[in-house]
Length: 114
Length: 114
Picture 1 (cartoon, helix red, strand yellow):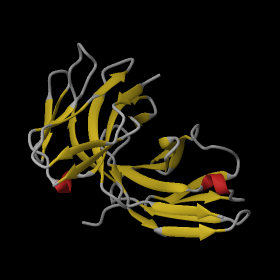
Picture 2 (tube, rainbow over the protein chains, first blue to last red):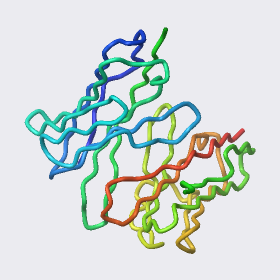
Picture 3 (cartoon, each protein chain N blue to C red):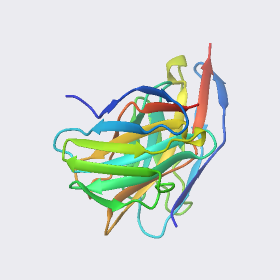
């Protein structure tokens, strides 16, 4: 079945540092890939997505590129801020006869300090 | 526009009691999903509906859990009887159609069973 593996946290960075959170996936077909973010006490919000190979999703300074050859979708940001502290989830979805279901990774907590 | 609405936001109950969680999806969305989030198991899909019809309930942990969607604007997740191991954050999410790959999450209900 489909699965998503992402690096364990917590990841602790100083403000303005470069961020990479690794994500790899296993899927039978051609999934869409997502990064969701969860701020403390809130639900998940879609951060960015990519629907086919070599697509780059971007939002709020975050980027991720759909790499089919390495089955990866790593999240990057050039300069993190304290306000980026949250839990980040990598996810995939595949369209089946029953619709689109999201498969999530376990989440990576990011802590950004001054 | 209003997002996905969940109630209550917090619920504390005693073991053996019935618990009902409520969700109002985004107006016009035809698919609805119930998830459970715990530290140990991460984010799990419990059940999802398309056009008010349950499509896949394979994630429902046991017979104590049941979910209904009597109309397009309301769904419930019921636990009867509740147990301490049911303590978790329960999220509802909706998407525009069964083929949509983007889901919109509610703020969650934090359930504590004593």
